[in-house]
Amino acid sequence: MPRISGFALLGWLSIAAFGHHGVPRGLTFVNAAYGAERPPIIIAHVCPTTGRFALHCEADRRGAEMAIGEFNGRGGVLGRKVVLVSRNPTLDPRHAAEVAQQLIAGNHVGFLLGAIDSGVAASMSAVCQKYGVIFINTNSSAPSESVKNAHRTKFVFDASAANFNRALLKYALSRRKSKRVVLLTEDDEWGRSSAAASRQYIAQYGGTVVGEVVVPESLPDPVVALKQVAAIPADVVAVNISGSNQIRLFSQIDPAVLQRQSWVVGEVDWEELYPAPGTPRPLYGITWAWNLKTPGTAAFTARYRKRYGHTRLDYPGDVTYSAYFATKALLNAIERAGTTDNHAVIKRLEHLRWTARERMQDYPAYMDPVSHHLQQTIYIATWHPRVTHPELGQQILAHVPPQQVFYEKERTTRLEPLAATPHYAP
Figure 1 (cartoon, rainbow, N blue to C red):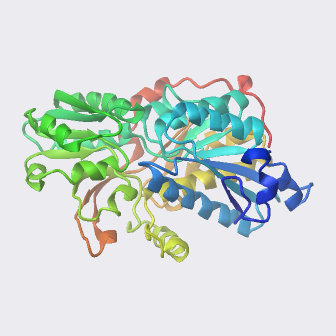
Figure 2 (figure 1 turned 90 degrees about the vertical axis):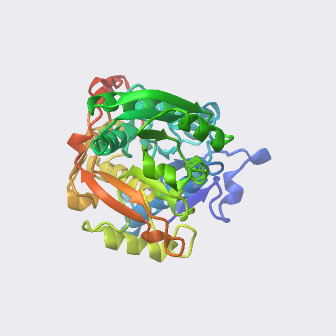
Figure 3 (figure 1 turned 180 degrees about the horizontal axis):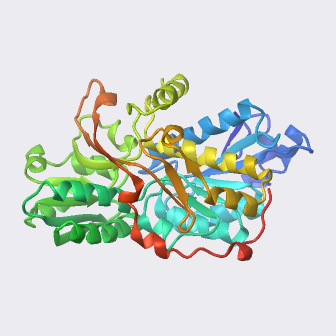
């Protein structure tokens, strides 16, 4: 499958890709490689390749690669090859906006896909809306992504922390006679909006918020945060800490504490579990697991392992899964629309439907046309450390249909009118 990393077309096109001082000239040179009459469809994969989400980014890109490989294997889309280019927007929303601007205005890419970090997703998708470029948010899970930061050109494919927390808090509080809850919140877009959504569910299920500990996004000292949490008498700890910060946090927790209290983590990705198999995780939410008994899961896992089984992440997780289906949704929408015109593709994506069998989940999934957020099955899981066989550490405790975890604020989402969205036909 054709892929450009950092705008270098794997050697033989690398000289053409960059101009003076290494600045990208644009991607029009690719047209000549495939023939002027059938230029490729260029998708920019944008996610932080360095920092605490680097492993997530790698997993996300693999999902996109798998989907694109399937389409290119049967001749591409509308007779055009699909080419994946990679850019690192970093974790700085301002820099991310500049990257999006360059990709669209300078390099004329067709579509943006990825993000991982919700602040980066919000920044880049605002630029995309300005130009009418479709932005496929594969794995950013801040509730705000499908409410205040939603756009007509953006589609969100991961479940949000609001969906996860609604399922998890109901599950945890129903098993506690006393229902005092302390929030442990990361001070960023994802953490703040996740904690805000949690408060209404805590009240709904009979709980009371007795305190909140807010920590910097960098989490400089997990021990300090844990001491602050321990000083607040509580029965449930609702954790909204993301990325590799989770590994650092839970490596410092005494397992006896997890026996006394219910620790609920809004979302734990495979990429936070598998590299640290000895670190305990209590109760968390996911959208998919490689060992589910759902139709198609075993075959997908086998395809992944054939391609990536020799790597650090030798089993697929929910990040790869989400990016795979998000990319497939985009390419299928282009095929069904018969054009890359954004207005036609948006209409197709707004009516996206998957059966449970197609989605490899327990319930059907559908795109909400109001919020542009995919509604899907939520799985409640726990982690039993298995250092010798980490792939077997995850245990599924329950699965919840999308209508039971719906985030009510999405009913109030206001997207830009399609008529006011610029046409863009790459």
